[in-house]
Length: 223
Image (cartoon, rainbow, N blue to C red; front, side):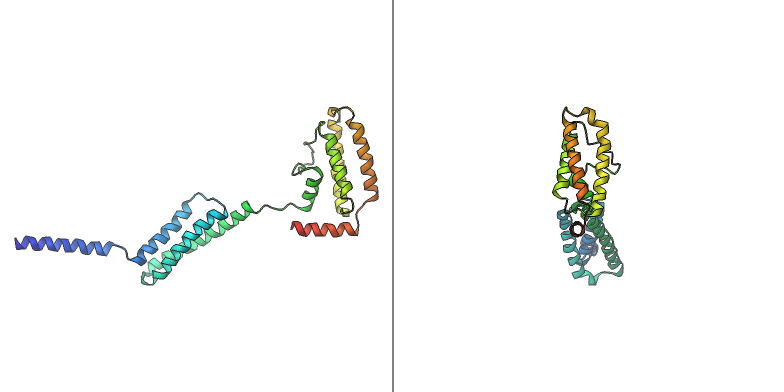
């Protein structure tokens, strides 16, 4: 009986000893939590927003602080794994920051694009200059907005601006030849009057010092 009790006690001691040996220390558990956290971020479907990244980074900072506080007792192999996780996280962080800027910071248009937007509307003039957005129904309104906008800003345009305006005007005239038969009766005579007004404005305004100064100021504002 004594022998059996001794064997049971020995077995229980062995189990307890094994359990103590297998349970990670605080430092080891912190390292495990840290490495697992970086692994989990890598596997996430990215959401590129400042608020989302702040939550992820706050979680990282909390875990890395705990890890660094207790890592002095870790083995060299465990320390190397932590450093590898930090390197992977740094790459993730860089990628997130780049993508967030692309998503949240709109690309400012060049001044030429801004000029076109002001004369015809946001983003309607394509690189092909086909002016497909102009129809018989909106032909008069398109000319009216173009000529009135040029008239209001005539003293602000540089020589380069006027060169661009001339190209845009010629492209509009080309489109007019295609759709003018679809325009409401009477629109063509009103368009003719707007063309005369534009010719007069263009003839007396070819840009100068004031236009150049305003262009430089606008380019600085855009950039």
